[in-house]
Image: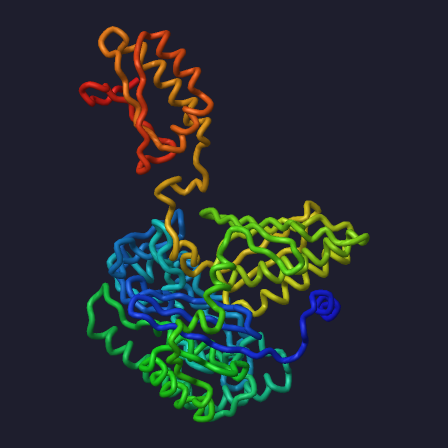
Length: 524
């Protein structure tokens, strides 16, 4: 079915050409992943608000909430970190791995229940935690005691004796080869490792080298645990450049281009520790134009972050973010199609599914997501849209869960929310409309002004006869052209005189009524 969908969308099954474009500036670093020139991944990191997800802290338990089954831990932030009892039980962690021990047999799990947690971590005790979700809005970070340190090919779990292989590696012959490598690794007692998806097909020596690096990293953290008092930071997740080398630079990446020489040399050095041959794929850009403009990234970013995103077929999707839910509406737009209406609808929905999965990655949208697709009568067409969406979400590094299209034409899904969405990072509420996205019409403001003037002139009709109104020029134009007669009627009724002055600095909905002689503001 997916092959037919690809053909309908005009997608090629050949290997895509991938490029990593890095823009490193004084205040902000950005990385974009291009596939055949199309923007597929986008990350931003600012010096003033660095991502803390993955960082490790030594904290102190401040209070325990049995009703919430959670602890609040002071890790040095304004808001205490939230540690759920479930995240304080190493055996309860859903790691997404096939669990094996060094001999290849199942390892029994140690039984710890939530009732044991208050006695294990009493108030005032120190606890070593790792941030799984950064501060969002007025909420503090979320943390876990299940520490993990990601390397190039391995993930080290110092508080777990489990080892395994990522379930995304599906080839059974390869899995057996990797199991053998895990058993032969010299892993200390009480420590576990996971072979990452990128480890598929790699030689054993790469895992040995990665393990040595991760154990050295953990040894440094252990030393700080013994020396430093809580609360303190023990380990920082690598910055954007470091994460790019670790997480993005795979055999699928054809070229890495960076506009900062120091960052380029640093990447070459880091990559050289992994693969000398891969260093030749990293290049420094020193062109006159900004790197994102040269490679067409900036225009794609600008187009992608509009509320309305157009599709190739002429349809479009509308994305609205709220605090807890994201609503996405699919419309045919200019794609009226020909005689086959069902095919037109299917094509629009398929392109929308592809674009929605891309937008979730680009905008880093998380939480509950509802997509309202155009109604499809055929269950086969619904399944095709669902299958394509599922395939596109498989490439997402964030955990996702998706349900089939309902009878109402809605597709429900969730996406892991580790940090604020990109729009929350880049934008703030408009000071003009207060985040509503709309302002009152000139007619509405005129009606409200008439109502207020009627009250004011009645209140001061014995003492004040000359009244001045200061307001936005757009509303003043409305008053002169369409509402002048009603203003004359007010003057006649209360034996007063009205004068108006436009002020372009005034909000569209704002007006001030004053005594024309003294300048004192008059209130209804």
